[in-house]
Image (cartoon, rainbow, N blue to C red; front, side, top):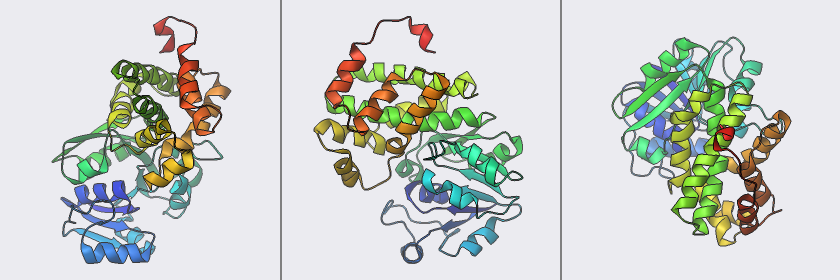
Amino acid sequence: MQISVLGAGAWGTALAIAAARRHAVTLWARDPAQAQALSADRANTRYLPDRPFPDTLVATADWSAAVDHAQGEGLFVVATPMAALRGTLARLPHDARVLWLCKGFEAGTGLLGHQIAQELLPKAQCGVLSGPSFAQEVAAGQPTALVAASADVGLTRLAVQAFHGGSLRVYMSTDPVGVEVGGAVKNVLAIATGIADGMALGLNARAALITRGLAEMSRLGVAMGAQGETFMGLTGLGDLVLTATGDLSRNRQVGLALAEGLTLEQALARLGHVAEGVYSAATVVARARVLGVEMPLAEAVNEVLQGRLTPLDAVQRLMHRDARMEAEGF
């Protein structure tokens, strides 16, 4: 298959390496200097320095070449941050077959990826590829399971053809809403868990945060039209556990830094990467309020990120909430 991966960050590069073990892959980088370095080094020395490119992977900064490579019967994979999804989709052919990897809500509009695609590419086959996956492990060929979600079953089958095999398993879903809500909310909850772990609140607290966070995620998703069972799967529980507990998680690292007493600006400067949960928190809370969905954990994270609560104040506020029936939360 002809596959063009648009975005040469860690995750885009990792998936391009995995796909190039069986397919012809073009990896597009926005920066010509980066594309030149990728071609010369045959590796992404910034993000994945120990993972050489297969011979079937070609790096370029030529947008037209990347489009020509996958146009028609090929597959486009958008591997940009959420903030760049709209601009990237707008440049693709109207009949493209495209998956995106970014997770979150669009700033300003509050839209999910599939809603942006409906606006820009109504005739295209569009969907999301998501799941519990650290780029370093995918590039290293360690076992990983993902979910391809789209209202177009043909596209999810194409995703299986592109990526399923070897160390990657790809499951199919017809619930892009649930998959995308899970991907957005888990990043916010990972910040919460990082804060709790950084404050040494203990494993009991971590388990409670993950479980009650899953309840919040499910409530919002169902209110937005998702299937409840999606949140028991890889892009709900699975991705939440990975991002909340794995130290490769950028969002978890933000929480740990905030617990140290760093400001948000200092935490992001230390990280040196995009942490989508920082930008999703306000939108998650806003969407929940409009829909009448209670999300106290997401609210607390947003208050900390906005500088209106300290991590300790947030914990105390959560612990003083009234008791309730557990099942009411799901």
